[in-house]
Length: 155
Image (cartoon, rainbow, N blue to C red):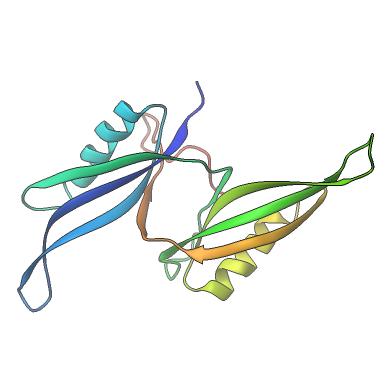
């Protein structure tokens, strides 16, 4: 069975640097095969990160074609890129665009654009960037096999 991406939101009391407590909602991306697995894995990942109680407020399917993870520790933001693949219809000769969404890890918009360009270099056919924008995603939880190494998705 093929895994999918789920956007999960968590709400909890966050202690700020000035020792004030503020209710906050954060968004994460989870690699799973179902909503049930996504929620289970998300809770497992969040439990050691949050002291105190938290609630999973939302889980929704994220329709992504690619995830481009960076090895650079400075790349601490996630950008959503919509890319249109351009093909020609053989019968009519008309140009056809197929838009797909990818997530790119980078530290700013310029780096996200260059990383997307770099990751798309081996793509056969013509493509154009339709849009790119920063997301509220804090982190991505990749599926881990028994050896605790993330599986797939990196480019």
